[in-house]
Image 1 (cartoon, helix red, strand yellow):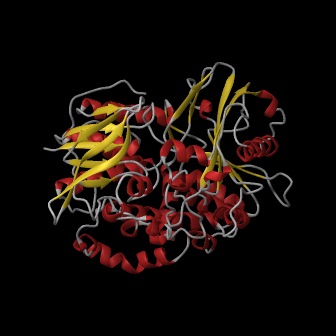
Image 2: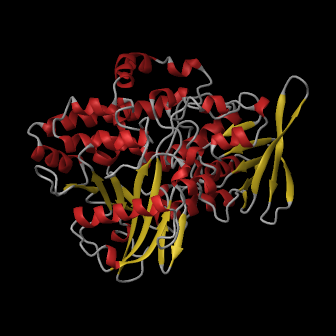
Image 3: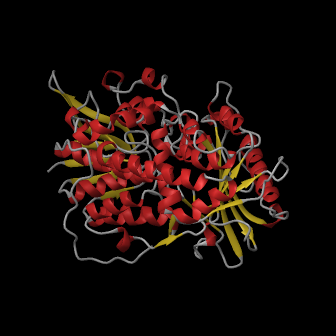
Length: 532
């Protein structure tokens, strides 16, 4: 077995380290920051603990499979709470027409009743929509998401060939128009289109194939892992170390070292510096970068060894940036469930501002709000609430940094103020601003500094057709043998489940496994860990 260096202790890096260590490799993980988790981070202050990254637990089958690959189960590792309602949608109360919040409950039948109440016949249309979404999800998991795309035969099975007309139709149609053909109510179309944002793209650009996302939140439901996603990160890290991986923080990789025999260039290790600036060399047979792919390719490799040089990136579309606002609030906020979506009326203008030719912070901006204290008593002091607010903005580090208690860059804090005022007015919490006792913000410049994020984006390349599946940057260097890539900026894409899958694709690559679907799960080991 090989000695492996993994760059970055985000979800993908930790998951890769665990899978490879369990497969018998000697693994060391080098993380530049003082904490693990990458974008799935945490901030603790004055008795509050904020997740500063992902907060929607979707695609539970992917988590189940990853934990099974580690010899355990999601049930043993996590304490999951099904959220009911799944989320609530708020609209501007000053807009014309009906603007009362719409609560999206748990379960297909209950969701169908909500749809029918807004548009006669929508329940039947939703049933067909979700059936189609489940079929697309099953096909994606079986043939595309876990596929290293190293053998053409993996896509020429009878089942795939029979589905080609349907798949081509879904790939050639955009998500927003796909929903609009089936539902007239604008808000219902927004509910069905908004999951594109989880994929880092505009619903007007995302292939309709991604309507599969609706099978996750509207049918399977939305769960919350007690302890938040930081608790998930802790469990993945613990399993990696139990498998034998070593994790070092404060270790920033400066370059990937290679050797050449004249015809083949192979990886030989990495050079890294510690917090004191002392240089170290870590020898390795294999290197897996879980860092941002743009940074890996353009900063850690010399120009002649780059599979994805700057010219390649100049033709790519970034997902959005984000202004994150983490608030500790005195008193209760019963007006807000665990998850809330604040949708602006002018949907197109909102996405034009983020993805258009003249990018700007949307005003007003559609906004996501998470209130984890609705489900988790440990994220806020007694008598207080915890709010995580995400405002999608252009991926542009020039927008600035966040900070504590209003000390961030002017445009970041102005965006945070606007979001607070929107929540206050739309959700009917007039004294929200006065009740804030803790305030932390992050902007695109923080994503660049903390994670070397391309263009300061919060997710990675957008999931347009040309940046999905086999068209996305793949998981192995074409120029350096033994160099692999994992994480949201590579295949299969953005989000915690995709990061877990990318780790398994790296495992496949190293094993020489060309199969399209999830690997067979090993026999369960007898164990029980304390749930987070």
